[in-house]
Amino acid sequence: MRRNVLSVLMAGAATALLAGAAQAEGNNFYVGGSVGLNFLEDADSVSNTVAGGLRRVEEDFDTGAVISGFVGYSWDLAERGAVRLEGELSYRTNDTDSLVFNTAPQNVVSDDNESLSGFVNAYYDFTQFSDRFHPYLGAGIGFTHIDKNVVYGGGANINDEDTVFAYQFIAGVTYKATDQFDIFVEGRYLGTEDPDLDRFGGPGPAGAGGLGGALTTTQESEYESISASIGVRYRF
Image (tube, rainbow, N blue to C red; front, side, top):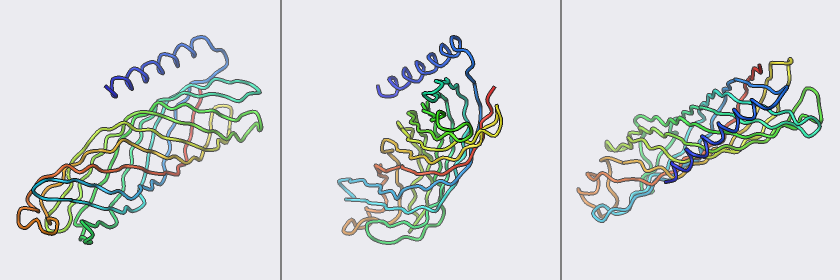
């Protein structure tokens, strides 16, 4: 149901974008991209099975990378600034720095934490204060596909993927290098609905005996990140 509602909202936003472009004069389509650093927040993944008891996986992550591409449209509001609406695809990747299973530190054998996100974003540009430098604020809604493959301890692994509702908040500054070419720096907070990721094998919790490590359990996990990026826009 949630995905159907979001699909309607995203389709409506795209329709409004095209309708506004057809009616407005002197406004601009644009395309662009950005690259930067991604700081994935610490994550707790928790499950509780009758046979195996509580399983809690706590992870810290190394600084990773983010890359994004987008297409949008800007409405000039003259002395009141400008409003933009865009569609964006972004990719993030981070390695696991350390992992604790039920309070016991584990040796991480291999790790891969990736996500692919699609958003509809809306922005307000403060163009009324300077001809060259334009601060802006934005927000977006969409989906994030999380793909996780982490092997640790005595052969345990979390190797699963899930697509969840996502949202983001954005703040940045644009420098108008030319009439058509912009350079910008920005920060973003990305949050998601909790993904469900399966855990297979490995060490079992205290008191579970040999059965504890053999079970497959579904972990309710977390995915939140803060990123800092630099990018360009070309308006036409």
